[in-house]
Length: 280
Image 1 (cartoon, helix red, strand yellow):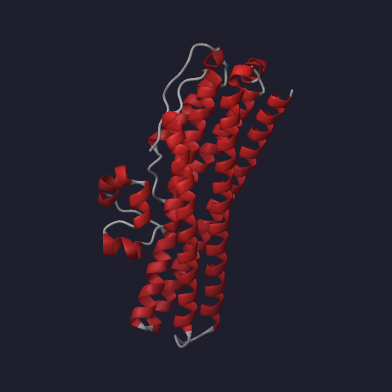
Image 2 (image 1 turned 45 degrees about the vertical axis):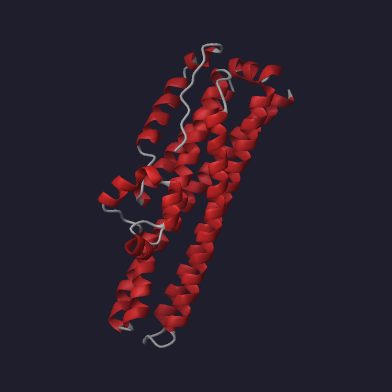
């Protein structure tokens, strides 16, 4: 995972009263960036909301605005704006993935409630699984964009204290979004066959050893496992378990959607602030 630790004394933004809260939140998010459960990812999304709110407060200070408006910093600020736009695109993609999965989950729940037998359910379940496959394919594309951003982070050097803070925030935001996308796309059924899902290999190679040791709870993949089991067994007794797992999945998705939407609004707010500084 990308990291950025360079800091400069050329601009005294670290002495801004809000900077200590930014540092504290950054450190907390870094320590939990390998989150693999819905509750921990939800907490990280809430942490990102706070982080970007602090950043907006920092950007409101005349000191920060003066630093960012300097002509020699313009290229760096524009690069950060490009990065923020890409982060917002990934947020939108994640929201679409969650929405698509939630709608398919709700439709399948409705079908299961109406039907007393298992006849005809196999085709409906396959539709759900096909939809999940499409979601995972979209997420793979989003990962490529995030990896490009990480390459940029690794290549860029130190350009001033305010710029440094904004880059650190962008890096941590990307890390949390990667965890979220990995959570949405993970298939426990595939993990059991391969030891670790393909997408997780691409995104979390450094975490594989520890992730394989700890027991993870993924409501979305658990629902998928239950559905595959129902198709395989053809046992109507499994329907109650499937309905229960689908309900848990829907509730999990709802929580993640709300956190992601709140984060997206804060990303827009911070981006508008930076654009206003450049245009002054």
